[in-house]
Image (cartoon, rainbow, N blue to C red):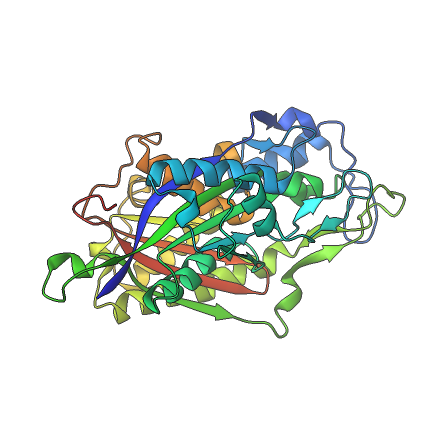
Length: 371
């Protein structure tokens, strides 16, 4: 029996820290193109109270999306101890590719995955690069695709990267711009064969599911011109209907996560950690509370939320596809104490993104490190 096992993880966080004072001189506009009359201090403080975002990270000038993806990938490969020439596929999750510094347009040719392969100097011509453009859910969806390839014996080792440089596509006149940040994460997923009577056959990727509402909910998160009609620096900016996304997340994500656990014959009590896409702290806590209600659990204390669902959004913001793998790598490397994941632990990973697409995955760590 082939199981898909995480053999290495890595991440990259830009060193440029953006605090709230960065936005004090911004001019914020509403959806009607009118300047908001409230003071920036009031706007920024209210934003921080809702999202809990105190800081976010922006890449330095001269770095591109594919650059930071390659850095995270290299770290995951080193951690895995797998020769990079043994990688059969590179799946790169992102949404905007490299952003041209002059035109501010997306550069998707060659693909980000092909650029990552080039930057890693992988010579193996049979290593195939794929881009996964799936909203903020892209990294988990890349893991799902990789698992299917590994179980079908089309590959032995797959590198899944996730990277975004949202600081290059935000509208400086949109309050929602303060949510987004830059970063990259990566994992190496490998096929490990177990005898069917071995205890370890229940390790690795256990179960997952994906849901895509691409009809009337398609444009909850999309692209558009600046809210300031006089701003001409870039014609394309990320545009978000926060209220609709919040309502959709609270309705659909808890149900999906419970269905995934039910299908795997597991209970929420079996889960050591829930690693959820770091989009908005208020929304993530609300999703967890709704999930608890589905299990008829009484909400005990705020401490319980922090224990089972670690967060990075307060310091790193929302780096889209990179949030979940970055969170995973930080915990595995002992950089998010007191949070820890030990051999044999079972975790639940989940994400929500443009589309609207949502997905979730159950992963159980082997009791002994593989490879």
